[in-house]
Length: 481
Image 1 (cartoon, rainbow, N blue to C red):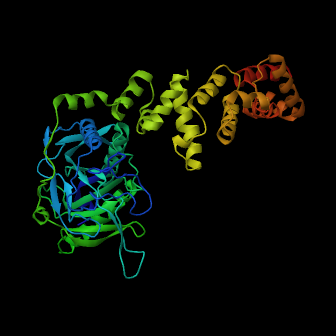
Image 2 (tube, one colour):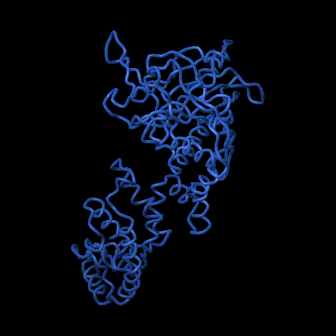
């Protein structure tokens, strides 16, 4: 039996660090990469008599996320204690939500092929506190613990087992990260741990409705690694089943260097955690007006923006996808057209010329030295035929390297396009006199040489001629030469 005879079944558990200055139940800073154990309060280390107080901002962001994912906003939710012992969990339990989460069922639509959409169910979203971080590589005999992250607010976003390929899982992560950034609930930085993914992976024979034993691959820190881990697990599990063995239900870790997973521990059951309602925290009850106020405050989301770009502005589906997926890119594009730039021309220059240079220098749109109004100015110079499209690319290079404005570059370098016919004819005459043999060949019927002459004239004029005017005058001159 071949690997293609087996089907993947994938569900994801995504931990998104909530964008809040302070932790979920204390006033300690939730910022990343501070010196170890400085952002820790008595509440975070569970000192006797210290009572948690719920962070209102974290609640707001959870509700914003739920609304953006077309999910049920539960008016009644309860915090519970999830009991387990680990050195970086000072309380000996994690405050989470279990039976009554803040967000219920939702859905997210992803594109799995050109024009083909698929709906992935969201099972629930609950709030919980993060644990600290253990370091096992600082000493051969000791483990060090940093509690800066202990108590940081997380949203755990759990999907239904609806995905059937690593590509679908990757598309879901991209779309979810985009939405989280749009609503401001999480910065989506997987490299620094603000967004972490656990993948639940199993395989079954195609056509079967029964689920196989699932394996949970923990703490995947990039979309690429989510996809790599799923592909490895499919291969591993199929090989086990086809050799007559069973897939053990367990938790595994992914090694990004080898592309393989390895066993970490047996998979826990719900009973192992001994959930019970946290006696220090009252149930969370949301007022209808509160939820509707948050709903009204949401920005235009990626799908809505993409649709508007296609239907109202006239962009291609591809350009609309590229420009809408990232909130900052979308804002940059809209700022550019707000300065009078033609939307299609702006889209072409941003997705082509600008992105090409940003990628080459490993920069993002927020690090770009070129402002939206400067792209609009450059496009205006092209439209009014002050410079040609070819010269514009040179101007753009100088803008990117120096931060100078396009008008100043054109003036300083004398790049204004030559439009006067007598000036253009002078350049043509020079080239024709220097290439009399090629002129004879052209007049003998080798009309493809026209491109050669155009290139030569543009070369001696340093690209400053209007191409349309040049071609018309050149043909006339060749007839009379």
